[in-house]
Length: 476
Image (cartoon, rainbow, N blue to C red; front, top):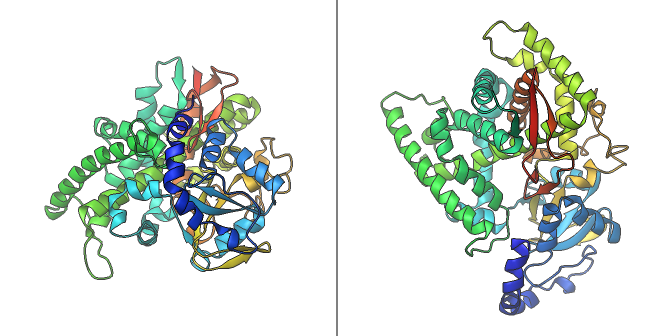
């Protein structure tokens, strides 16, 4: 039996009785003109079905069933204990992305806030705004150019240590290992594999539990995520203390990475960030900086195994670049600009297997959308599948076709793996470089075939092959 179902079957009667009064108080039936839909069970809402459709490999089912039953533009539900409107389609994406900080603002489930202690001092919304002011200098294309050679060097070391001499590789954990190594180098200037490995395992536990049902009981993903966050935070605090000493002694430079920048940055009152605050910000960056990219890389490998004609075209492009390099010469910005077909392939992968299913917002004012009322305080959810697999946006949506991204590419607000508007993921370019560097290094070395031809895909909360995508590798 699925552990989530087991927990709820045991504790549902208690939860229902304890929160029945609260549920009645939050009955929104008196609000006129709400979107169609159902709110599900007291407090729990439809969270179980929302999570389980992903774990069963069909995250789009929760969305599609309700779009067909209620409205293709908007429906109401309750997820993570919150009344929520799910806004769908191109018009929905445009509305949310265009009204950031006007009608809506960022929102995260309580499970996210409770895992980060500093969010009790300042809200996660405020933290996000501060981070977005701080990050552009490090994540804009011209700044990232200096990281390409470093990413290439880490990729080479990764394949030498983890792939060379093997006949079979399980791709997903190896992709996570590579992207975490890169994130540690870019954000913390740590590249020693032993040091990186010290908190890579607890980090994976944290990533899998951060968007789980926030039940703090033994054995639940949420409880494991809390303990994992504490373990990582202790390691980060030790790194932060040492970096402060190194900065004072001029053994570290102010602009060598994001950690140094955070330690020397001040707020509007001239105050430095405290160490816990810095640790939590770095922790958040590490989550955003490697987990989604590792999912995208894994599915690139999966689709290239299934589509030999696509593999051959990518191989041809990457081989040309490899031939143009001198012995020992690392990839550079110009090389990545030549990887046009490879990036089109990666984009088509992210359309069919988006690393994130969507994101959440909160209404900061009453407003209407598609003729329905959304009260202030309600949560909102946009989901990539309402456009990514919509035949009105992408003809023959189940077909793998990188040509969709040639020329001007898809219509605005249809392809949204990185979100859009003011809250478009600031790490989009970082992810592009990391994915392309991995593609270059894996495809110039190997062909591969899937060990499990019909391996199931689950979403928990990121998409992943159920067995981690084992492949047989064949060196060129």
